[in-house]
Image (cartoon, rainbow, N blue to C red; front, side, top):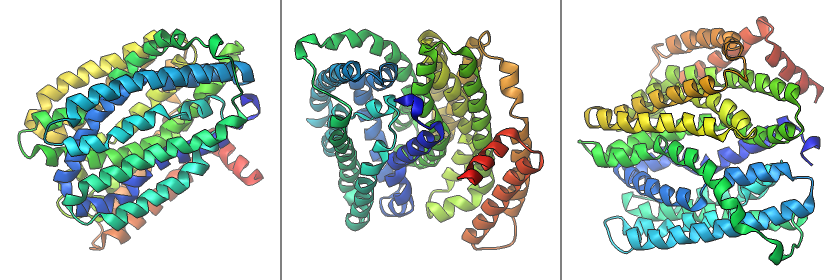
Length: 480
């Protein structure tokens, strides 16, 4: 099944799907940031971070494990059907247990119990999440088509019903219900790929330990993606929920840009797993080389672009009162490159080739360092401290990743292939940053000038120096 799929098409489909997951908060940021204000946004972000822990524990690494195992048997309808039922039953059991614990721990009492009660929907939605199955069979188109309408309806609900910070519960409901409906909608496509199997042949709990092996690195990853918000809410000395709000709004932009970069990893995981199963080392290395080059080509302009436009972008996008976001975006921008490269090594190589121990070591090192740095920096620098901690943790993760694969991958070659994109990115940055200081008061006009000039310079330089990857992409586009 997967051998006939186009990696390029799957990348585009998956990138659209990942962006759709974030599209509600991204489209509504200018409206929501002005209507709800930073304190309400901070409350939502803080409670969502708590809910995320329960979802993480409930799903115990099943999504990534299920995607990989489905990729191994994607061409055998009986095996993939049995695997699907075993994993979905195991997921329903584990998520249901965490749902009960969450209810008694947070919904029955406490300041934010109304928000927690609404976010039960998020936990329930994860029982019905089968996106891992479609990723495993490399059918990414299915993940996009049905969800698109659901997301657009949710955006409309937010604009229709939110008028003040008092409407925060409605905002949370809109976000949560869209997740549930989106997950349920994918079930309509399953009859095409799953057939009936005998229930007495199912071995549900045989997947528990392998999933737990992947669960450890996911737990560690959450420490520097979610725990930052929890720790900000607890450790920030001044206006804690406002600080969480600033950090949350900054993270949304960085995550959106990261989606474009890391979507390739989701597409490549099943493909690399299939190639590894066929023991085609040469093809595996070729894909790795292309993945590194593609990540550099996309990451550098995003990183440098974000730094250069932050000053003009924040007041236009967020409105007044969000000045700290400008500096958080600048501090956080390098994680686009760091996470992008870590994704190539971890998601595209270590996981599909069974090197979970190396993958786990990398993310645990980052998690421990980030946890410690948060304790040191958040009380002194609030959201800035959390941002610095995240960047340093991601840099450490990348270093450990490279160290672990040094015998399998030519690390020096993998780093040096960034030269063309670094040069083009620096030229783009110099021009775009300088244009940010032109004496025009209209920020929107300046942003348009910065972005269009920067993009033209970046890709113009790649064209002039005849970059191999860029030329191959142009050739494919022209052929179509």
